[in-house]
Image 1 (cartoon, rainbow, N blue to C red):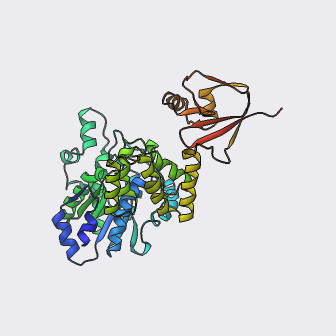
Image 2: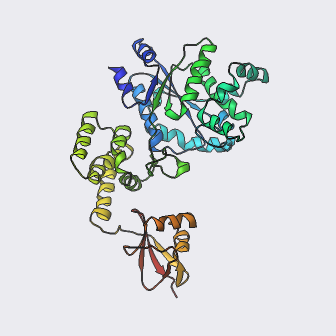
Image 3: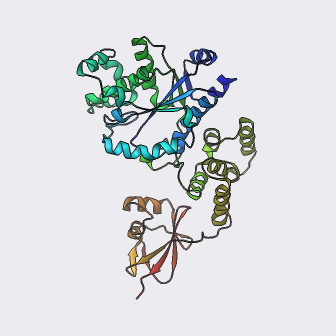
Length: 395
């Protein structure tokens, strides 16, 4: 049944009875998804929503992707404790060049409609904006969790931030959305869209919210800004390695939200884990391989699998380790990590050492004050996937 396909793995549908009516009507529904053009690369977290949108398309419905070029220049404060930096038209145009090709790795191009909200928001006069603003109250806009927290902490809230939700809700009016899909962190905006559609005499959209996927740290939602993401265009090797590093308690959630395995198979895997099967085996044979297979070829997925086994299961070093030439005989380990590119900053280098993530020829470096003295070619390793071969400068 169509409704069961749509409900699978969703976090919340508001209201579900209206969704059932819309699906049963036989109408080709317009399913709206807002796109943030400030982040041009798609990661597995955002792919969760795109994959659900693809299910709507398989049922014959139209995906309406709203590129927030106008609202991006305002700055979406959703879930943020401070104002998001604004972006220029040139940056938006550059970001969208790659964004569309990545989106169409998942969605059906024939059933995908791209719309830029500057098309209607950019045409609003001062009078139009005032009329639009009259359809909401400041108190209502401050109900947003992030806004409420900032307000009670006496932190500044710019007027343009309050308008963001209003403009995003107006997007639903402009494209006559039947359904809006996204993450649970957008619930306020989605419900605001329902309200505004009623104000304009339209049938209110149903909101379909997907769970937020935790990133590699296992705590915060997957995000490029947190550095805990897995991009869908990353190399098979990098993608495979990152998936192998996710916390064990997220395996089932990842299987449900990022793979094409059916429910019965996932239930079977969950029972195997309860019976004591090694989680590493599940990640290796099911999760990492299945996800890489979606975004790359079967041959590439197999190579990533065997490559991982070579390095980690057999405790062998990878082939073609990049070299780093020392310009000095003795160097502080923190400086070495940063200079070689294995750590972006000195503070991050310290954190890696303190967490036991740095090794020299397989031996863990525990002292942040350690000074490396070159005597022979040495393998420096950070985490499970980063290696460099330290060489001396030729005389």
